[in-house]
Image (cartoon, rainbow, N blue to C red; front, top):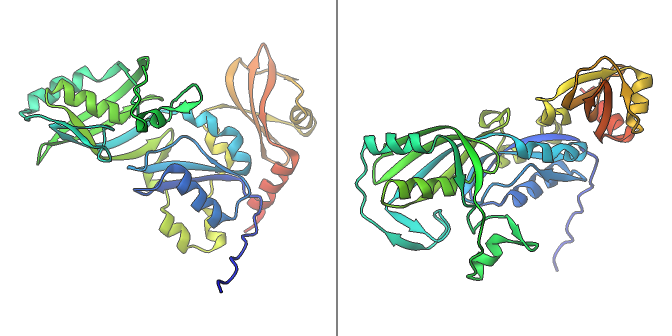
Length: 314
């Protein structure tokens, strides 16, 4: 007879965990594992990484989930290795080989292609992606053998570095805008080189201001005790570090949290992080227009209280 499974006692946990996502797990699988380790009641992530990809995956817990969408807009950095001369059905190593061509690529060829793909470019999103058509993800159509017409989208490659490697492979280092598909970039670079390509590996090294050197792996997180795991959490306001800041006194803070606009000597700003003065606490986001601070996403009083209690615990 099997012993009954121990039920995990969930608790309110607020903050951002910078995870170095392992190879082979989906973003949601990695999230659920971290959520279980933290015994968190509520969790979400800031955009997915493919199972093939590793690297920076910010995970949001509790109050931080209210601001996770903001991080989808962040620029990102990647390192990838592309195999030249071999195209696959998915653009990466998980797909079936659909074409093979001879490879004859020089450093001069790479320099030419590097310049061509630096700056604003247009990409056709891959079929094996989470984009949706009529409420259904494109990868679901792809698994059924159905090809959906996709409109090109404008993205920006802020910087691109290409280097020849042994065995007909190239290293790709890229800093990109939101919505850029690195698998598609690798395939397009392969076509521009005249031989085709697919990604053999992909690692996200930064998203916004979060870098891989600040991340924790799941095995390390698992080896920690609960206090050590909680200590790895960044506060929710880490997601809005690029916002302008406004600090309110107690009376204005209370009214702001109830959804009321506040008037003050503030310059117009599209994105503002709002804090209370006493006690110092993150209240939420807003924007300023014509001297009015207009509430956006707000923390609840209980979330603020729980966050302050957590921060006060040694």
